[in-house]
Amino acid sequence: MTLRSPKMLPLAVLLAAAPILAQAQKTSKTGGKIEDAEIEIVKERVNQLPEATRNFEKIKIDPPAKQAAPVTYTYPDFRLPADRLNPSVRVLSIQQEELAPQTGNYLKGAIGNYGTLYGKAYLHNTRSETASYGLDFSHISSSTGPVDKKNSGSSQTRLGLSGETYNGPVTLGAKLDLGRERYNFYGYNRETRRLPPNADSLKQVFKRAAAKVYMRNQSTEAPFQYDLGLGFNYWADNFKASESNFNVALRSAYTLSEKSRVAVNGDISLISYKDSLKTSRPFLQVTPAYELTLDRLALSIGATLGYTGDTIRRAQQFNVYPSVRVGYTVSEDKFVVFAGLGGALQRVTMYDLTTENPWLAPNQRVADTHRGPTVFFGFNATPARALSVSAKVTLANDRNLYFYNNSRRDSTKFDLVYDNKSTQLINVHGEMLYNAAEQVRIGFKADYNGYKTHSLAEAFHRPAFQSTLFGTYNMYDKLLLGAELYTYSSSYGSSYVRRLVNGRQLGEVVRPTDTVVDLNLRGDYRIMENLSIFALGNNLLGRKYERFLNYPVKGFNVLAGVTYDF
Image (cartoon, rainbow, N blue to C red):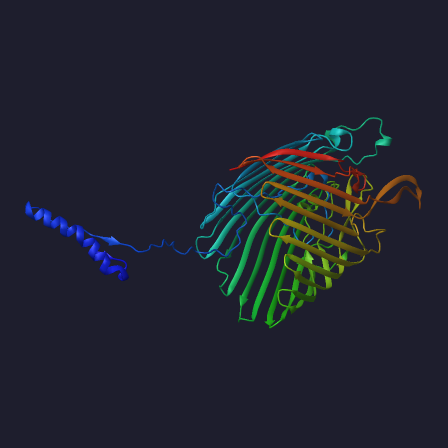
């Protein structure tokens, strides 16, 4: 007999023994037998689950297990990409943070004006402690656009496959992205044409493929931290140009003590580019640094050594830049100031350039940007709960910084142009984010870029000011509202006239582009547990502004569709 409660032993024994004795007396008269019995008396039972193993590594695709709880909304596609509001001259460092991502898998579909069709599929395994894998597919196309209907249509299709395994001390992963994009060169002068050109004669098509395999250690407590990736990017256009890029990236650090460590970061890239000519573009860059933390002071001292095979504008191929950063915590978790001295080579590829400007002319000469020496200083602050503020000022000296200008051969296309000398840049960046319990989120970010060019008349198609104001409001996971306001200051492009200028028959006229003010609104409403409807409005002010000269964007455009979660 097993007793689990010593305090109740006497009472338990009496209560348990009474019926047994009675039965024994009864059966003894008839010659019966008392059978063995086990009595278990439990005062209190506590069910305990074994402690789960925690995985500290960030997993990019990590959907939770299927559940009946309401699904939280997100904005994976707040702004239609067809308007080509990019590029931002400087990548804004704070992401447009959103509400918690949707749980599980989902399918989306929508239609809109300009003959727009939209579809998206997110298919991934549920949360797992050993692996994650999945598929992402998206498509958006507009059969017509702002100029001569079909002549300004566009489409973008992307398929992404990814997988990670983290069952042991090392995380192994692989990614594959495939894409196809169709654009038209619709920036022609309609006033000088009797009839619009055929859409097929304006056609530009990009084919993209990016594969990557990577590995990194899982334990954040290990003295040696590393992240190693090997990749291959392929790009081709409709003019029989192609680019193949083999690349390797390493991010590593070794802890020497509780207050110091050594970090080594490196990048290797070998590009084979082919258009009317065939060009090889090797690239190698490594940054070793010693990092030290002394109470409130954080110090990093190192150097960046880089080599590029580009030879245009007589820029040096081998470069050495300082890599120094000092940070001081004025108030813990409240206010940090920092300053530094740096510089580096920045890899430039046709793969990336055509995501910024899809109307580039054939036979471009691409060069890596030499940024440095660079001086920067700024601060990060959390003045109140749920509020974060940061600012940074950068003074840079850039060699082979690219600009987009209308081509002399065909003003509907753009050439990459470079200053004969270095371009001086002052960048002032600021951002603010307020996030109240995942219900209200408001953010603002802005950049001012002052360029001093020498041989170029203007900093072509690089606006001096750009900003984004965005906000979302989640009402009981039933209705989600969002808004974004984009602003870009006017920049410059060139148009050409047939007249005698300095003995030439072609004259260049520098023209300003439009100032961009773009308002976007969105609403999602859940009508059932797994079914919701949404509406997305872009450029609600209806201004067909020209972010790139001769290329007006679509005016007021909307999408309305359905999301199914499972």
